[in-house]
Length: 497
Image (tube, rainbow, N blue to C red):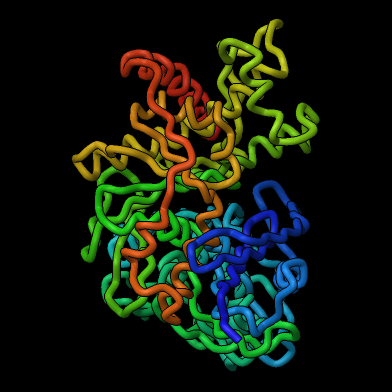
């Protein structure tokens, strides 16, 4: 029986999804389940790792069943995941020792501050391409080992395993037989040397992390093992990648000069830079891009912590929207934001500002401020934050970006995409398939198994659904940004103590 489909498991920050793709790269099925978000203290964000696995395995079976398929129809599985989210579990029982600490979590800000005070930031940045920020997994892992009773002793005895969500899904998918990760996820831990492609002994020593807890690292496109769970038995797991690097691959951005921005819970702008790392001079990150070989590839990245999540906040916490899809129409019901600016620094500010103590700020409110103004300001804030990242990226590369490829849930908002094009003064291209995270890891799995011949095939399959061109001048865009810069100043002032 021909195996004509790839199953992509897309484990995100707020939901687990499973998607099916055919040989032409068409999405033919999708299932999704949301899971709980836990906020035990200010700035802390946690997930139940068992619930993540339960929802992810359920949608994998559901998408096959709904499309009248079984394991025999699937050529390979690819796993894409929310990056930096940290899980620690027992190797024998498979049970987590603590809830997963989510990438948005800021509890390790003090650890990062102490490392900076000790003069170690340059060392971490040179070796990992990252900044000392609570965003990344290494300090989360240190916190778990230091704060979960018995965890450090168990780690020293080799009894527990650390992983980002890709490793956790693979472990469960293979019934505890395989503890591995890929290089893109490893490169987000503060523990992995992106120059030699190895866990770094010096950094592990600084954070007091025993190497026994770490997974094996392989290229993103690699035969990681075979699924052993009911309904999926025998399917090769042929790719794993962090969601943003997977999206870069799914957008067919393989060469320097191309870039993509994903509008999900956060926003993540990535630009490939080739086979040699190039340190950022403007507070961006150097990270590993996806490959199907042992040859390392690199990208520049700017991460915005709160993107589409600000619309969820308007819906779930303020009740201004019944559905996120209403945001565009409500924003366009007013001619502008009425002079207000919302800086959604709910989990601090990411690139290029890197202020973990910042908190959300709403500036310029008057008696005439309405719900429509607030919704519009929230959508504009997503674009303003992304434009800040692009300006830093252009300064790093010395060459302005010619076009921006976009994906993620909020990329379907035409108002936001047009405003983004106006601000950035570049064309914004939305592809036919905006689920490019899942598509990217499907592509990687397909290349690994020979389902697709080579990357040139994937370039030919990338198709534009809508193109947004700038409709205002550069001077007008700069004037719009003046108010945003003032609001940023107010936000940073609030975080000063």
